[in-house]
Each structure stands twice: as C-alpha cells, then as structure tokens.
Image 1 (cartoon, helix red, strand yellow):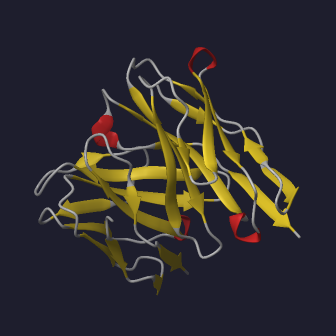
Image 2: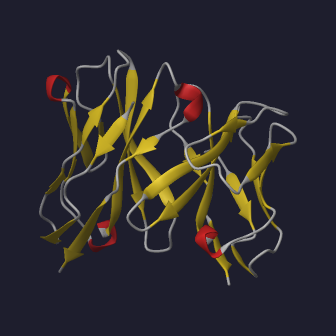
Length: 116
Length: 111
C-alpha cells in the first residue's frame, strides 16, 4: 500500500533564508507522481510543484525546488529566500499511475513559520 | 486554472441531522474526490468518482454517501450526522496524470 511520511512536524526560519522539508514515500508502482501542496492560514490547499517519477531532473517553480532522490524514495521541498507569507503547512503527496483514479495520498504535513 | 467551488463554506447541524455538501468543478475533469481533514490524521479520502453516475469508496466511507450527478457536480451526503463527522471537508478534481485541484473547504460542525 502506498504511504507518505513527513517526519518534521514544524520548522521555524528567519525571513530571506532557505528552508528544507523532508518527505519519504512507499509504493510498489514503477510510475508515480509526487506533489507538494501548501495549506494557508485560511485553510486553502494550493498546489506548488510536482515531480514525475520518470524524470531525473529536479523540478523548480519560482522559489520552490525539489530534491528528488529516487533510490531513497525521498522528495524534499526547498524554499529559498523565504517570505513571511510562506508561513503555512506544507503537504507532500503521491499519486500512483496504477491507482490514479484514487487521487492523492498525503503526508501529515510540516508547519513552517517564517519570522522577520 | 481549475476551479472547484464548494458550498456551503460553513455548516452547523445537530446530531442525527441530514447534511448535503455540494461541489462543482468547471474544468471538465473526469475525477472528483471528497476528503476530510482532521488534526493528527491529515487528509483522508472518503469517496471518489471518475465520471457522472460513477462512485467509488475511499478510505473512510462509513457514514457517508456520495453522488456524481454530472461531470461537474459531486455531492457528499451525511444522512445521520454524528459529532465524529465534525471536520473540514474538501472537494477536489483532476485528470489522470495532473495535479489535484482543491476547493476552499467546508467546515462542518455536528453538535
């Protein structure tokens, strides 16, 4: 069965620095998709960035980038030049190709607090 | 950008009451989902559907029914609401290999 684990429950950082969040996953599927989402203080869940398992290059979108280590079943999220508004809960999620109809399996999230 | 609209955004009902949560997506996605979010459990899949008239059971279906009346509309029904169903509910939609897009959530309180 698929599983996504985020071991860091909370991280505090100073504005304009870099924060890194960990995520490991378990799957028997050879093809899968990995996602990071952000849940804002209002409760909205916003898609940030994705990594397809067959791609070797790490995805980058704006100041978000991924550290994809396939042999370790790991997909870390890196946020550079953090801003106060990056304070949120970040969820790692996976979607297996063989079970794509079932949507996403989520980790429990990492709360990031950015301080001035 | 995908648009997923949930209504109502907030709902309070009594134990044993009847509640319907509505969701509409306007991006012609085939797949739609209902999740609930609870502290300590994260987001858990209740029901999902891959087209009008189709319904699949998720991971936590007990106490919930769902119906997909059109490609756009997906409803979650609580026929005998219980306090354990107090939660934040999210509807979402996607195609096969795309990211999943979420609505803004419905906060349900069962007193």
